[in-house]
Amino acid sequence: MAMLTIKDLDVYYGVIQAIKGISFTVNEGEVIALIGANGAGKTTILHTITGLVAPKHGSIDFEGHNLLKTPAHKIVSLGMAHVPEGRRIFSELTVFENLMMGAYSRKDNAEITKTLTEVYKRFPRLSERKKQIAGTLSGGEQQMLAMGRALMSKPKIMLLDEPSMGLSPLFVSEIFNIIQEISKNGTTVLLVEQNAKKALSIADRAYVLETGKIVLSGDANEMMNNDSIKKAYLGE
Amino acid sequence: MEFIEQLINGLRSGSIFALIAIGYTMVYGIAKMINFAHGDIIMVGAYSLYIFIAKVNLPPVVAVILTMLVCTILGITIEKVAYKPLRKAPSLAVLITAIGVSYLLQSLALLIFKATPIPFSSFIEVPALQIGKITISGITIVTFLVTTVCMILLTLFINRTKIGSAMRAVSEDKQAAQLMGINVNRTISITFAIGSMLAAIAGILFISQYTSLRPTLGTLPGIKAFVAAVFGGIGSIPGAMLGGLLLGVIESLSKAYISTELADAIVFGILVLVLLVKPSGLLGKNRIEKV
Image 1: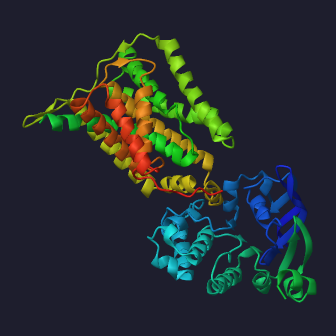
Image 2 (image 1 turned 45 degrees about the vertical axis):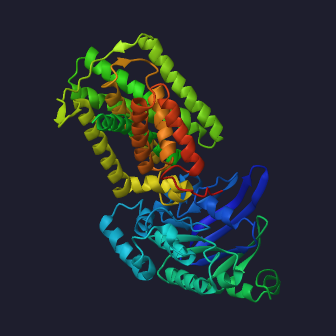
Image 3 (image 1 turned 90 degrees about the vertical axis):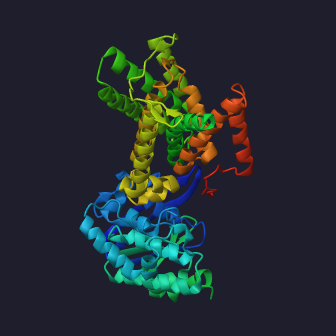
């Protein structure tokens, strides 16, 4: 069943149309990859879903909630967490405070402590550095913090925007392992990536974006073997 | 001995500047605007106190609480009516609006209370303290106590509470804060409420030592506190505290040992020097603005 349905989305920045009539669905339990070159509109789509950008036309439905009528700060409590591009951690807060910000909309204090323990278990580095000011973490650690912070809201779906950006190959593999783990634990994942090879390797289905339009969609494995995809995005 | 007394005087007026400066710096930190109407909140506080005590004859404690309430509500209202609609406007528009709000408040006070200064006798009756040859007046003791308690409570609030962390998160990245479920508008309202409440307290302490009310009484302490906030590093709360205290001491010592007339020039001159050496202020951070 479709968990997230996006229909006929048009987004403008001033007079420039960034998203041109995009429709797609994310089903519960899936890992969906949105791939495409820089400027294709991937980040804009995620920003529109979580209410940071308002579209001109279209609809976004998340488990029966009209997200376009939901204020941005109320979306996380519906079960949707967004890990933004460039991590956007609060660099002047400690690691612990950042994680607690992730649980800001939750009221169940005992359960929050439980989630915190789980997050620390998944990211032992964050546990070691919980009192450290987040701005002093390395890029990879900041990405872990951004993901841990999102997990603190106990999301049903996680939107990940370029999680591998600017990371060393070792960290990239680690981040992708973690995404797979998150998916195995029952969280649906919508992944935006420029690293198409890595994204397709863990995704169930994928959509390829070109200048604001979906030009191709289908099974991630099949796409990996598609010649035109190989040429354009996988560098083969 | 005289030096120590001048120092104490400076710290007294400085701690009032610090209370006002905190309001400027918090609002700047979170809404990235200079609220030039902040000084006039002090004036509204002073007049409110006068009405509650001299006209309505309320007990001082009740009058103080009501005054704080009036200013808090005023601060929230100003933000909602004048600044919130301009959240996406260029910062110059917000700045001009703030100046407009400042004149509006002063003109309203002028209409209601006229230009003639109204005498006001302090309601704070605490005996002076004698330590050796130094006399510390009652109002000075009260000012030190009140400002210290305010600063401690504020620091705890900002660093130890959920709303405090949310305020810090919003001041750093509004979009990311929204993604956490933080209501940015409400956080900004809370910031204005706290700033205005501190301005009310500053107004009460201020009027308790300068015994007359004028519609423009908030202007000079407002400007000086703004200078103190920039001096300490705008956006930094410890910076506002330090900036306020230093400004008070520099002003007091300049008046005593150099020249009363030149005191303001010296204060502003030192500000210029500090900003030349460290443009972000004493405790300010060179935060890289994100695009």
